[in-house]
Image (tube, rainbow, N blue to C red; front, side, top):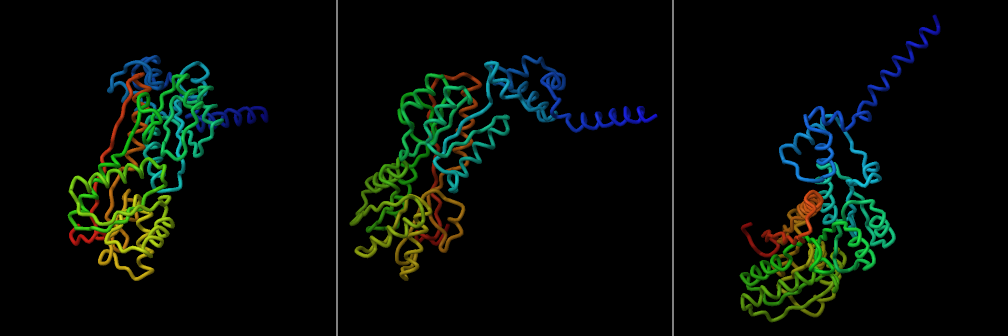
Length: 356
């Protein structure tokens, strides 16, 4: 009798365990059966190989989601298939800009069942290892000009035939996919707005001297002033590091010897720093000096006064970069793509405008 109960307990326990582990037992055969296509078709969709009709692809992914099927990336890599993994290099993930970029990247990757490996330091050994050992299908690399990528790493990636999409200007323009922001155009719009206000004594708080984005914004601002034949008496340039403290310091150092009627900072954080300095000295914004920024970070509209700034679509940058990567993998495209995303002027009260 005891043996019968023992056997029954084992059977029931085994049934419960199997039910609890159902998701881990789901195979590509189950997916193929549910969506009504062959295993080969399902495999092509998962590995983004060959041409599959959009309607077919949608049905396969619907079946995958319904069953909770998780492709075995490691096994796929060992058999010469795809790892369904993209390596992402970002200089930082703590700022709003990089956090938004990462959100955009992750949202698209998750929808397509891709994994992301995030590297926040330009670590030659780590990036080189990912490339030469085929641990990833593609790279997304943020280039800000301050931390140039090691030439050996880029050569290794290229030799392995691994696609690379740069966020920002690539080291070599001719052989890289790139997602860019129209920094020049956004700063031109701000310059035109300054001329309309009649500002003549201007302080431009730039980022680090070698920063690509900052240099483009300064170039675009000067271009916009020239286009409007502006009667500018003073255009001084100070440098910060895009953070609030450096904006405060730049304003402090320059206001001691000059009087400005407008400050254009190359980031909202530096604009905030300049506003805080002015407040500490009893300088009114915008009555005594107008202050504007660049980025349109989340806090900009909640400042007192709300900050006029140039909006760049930070999360969209990440989304489009990942979509570009997946499109390259799906179609085996060798044609290099360059996309420039538009910027917009967000007019609020810090520039002196009363109607926003």
